[in-house]
Image (cartoon, rainbow, N blue to C red; front, side, top):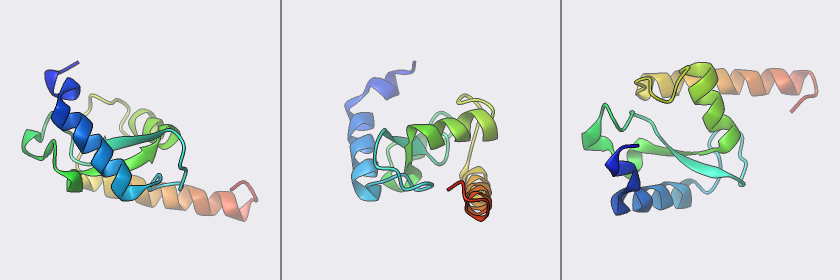
Length: 102
């Protein structure tokens, strides 16, 4: 794990992102909240601690993004990937509602 993930700045960034959003931006869950970098922090170090580059996700949606959408937490992701994920998530939620699963 990189040194920046253990830094005080990172911990402050996480708290600020979660306090701003209060709940998962995909499903609205309030438990197991995590801060996700919209533009990957490793590839965009200048945005690493910018609150605007963060979004709150629940653990389940965060795993969905990295394992099903981006295939890996090590894979570079950016704003366009995030927008595509939001659209896909909204679609899946709507489909679930149509079939009584949401």
